Image (cartoon, rainbow, N blue to C red):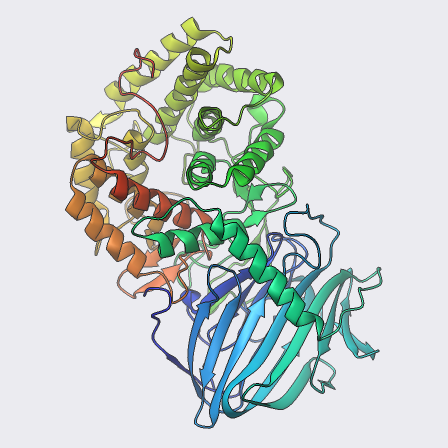
Length: 634
């Protein structure tokens, strides 16, 4: 559904509405340090303060019975529609009842009184503003506020004073301020109030460490916070240089990407959530609130191409800080500040989204060896240089050490792009990205005058290519791994990174085979989990990023109509406010995986650009410049 054209939804009162929600029922609000998810019923069911990866204070997204929520809704059933206010992350949910209509506004203020471009610090307080405005008639409203700290494991102690209800639990505290009377119980705070046309009632919750005094917030601060936040997002959106056919879709994706950027460090988290399932009821539930190196080039190119040089430079700087050190210690992901220890644990007190267990925090994949990330890092830094974001001489020394490591280790197996838990293999995509690492180092020397072991690197680049073409091809097409003839959607990346032309017979055959064997109802699976052993039980949805990769490959093949048809299907499955998850079940017609997924939105933007630049003499390979012939520099 397109933004602004969503169908109305019938929502019952809190006591009578069903408990089962879909992933796409949620909308994101964020302050570029943390975020919240709000359901179609006006229930805030995921909130992590003060960082994306902090323990959730409201986590009923992962356990609807016990883990904490904050709902504001009409006392009677209502028709619901929602939208983002212009080009912002301010969410407006409209409830239409028989007696009248109200609009609920949700926002995580960004500025908190500071100038729009002033740097933020992690120590700042974080705030949620929720405001109910009467649109028509008179509507009876209900508010139920029940935080539970540490992913629902800590019931808070409520204490009142000076018009504030403070919830305290361990190191965390939340202060609730409201313009209506509040009833404080042992486990929750409630309110019953009526709103008439033109009347506004405000609620504000401010986080602070429990050992520090809180800022003295007032309910009347909400208007200023909303106005400042709207100005921030509108000014940010105005910097976008894209004015093409899909501007609403591209702009919403850019805003989502900005919302998932951790402003203090420049890192971009993969998603806002943990443990939303890739199969309902299954174990493929992972924590995505970290920064993956794999998609560094995608993100960097998109930010640069759309006018966001500051954000691109911030992401580049985060990347350099995170990967600094011994090349053999390079990880596939890091924490928001570049933290390296992301140990995975299971939260056994949570029932999981629709019973999907285990619920995990941390991600054990940080310990895997994945050869492809070396290519991603060197490609990203090469891309930044081409755009005029030059790194220091010390940064080049780091890159030299990375490419030298690849030259020594590229023949080794790894866990691959999909972070399989079934052991290391010689994945074709991984070998191609090793080729990319060496190729981009050579291009950096040739184009930017850096010094390096170019003669040795050229020999390695050719050796990698020769081995891939000898051991990575079967029946005239590429295969998943040297010892595995099955298909893998990561092979769609080969022409996008400049390893081979899409029209080459082997690549064309690979694309066509993927269309035949990995596509369900038009959407692309990573691989067939019922055939491939990845260390987990079979079953997951189609992968949206891979589906956008197919769009790009179809463009490169000159199949513009097919590419456009697939792209239209992909943007049509966005939820009512324009958000995408990681995966999609085409049979149940519902999203799967963590939500919203940053790199699904990055891929959407890239495909929109690819479709618009096709036939215009421009590259459609996501800003990556590479040639199929490794002997010819750009």
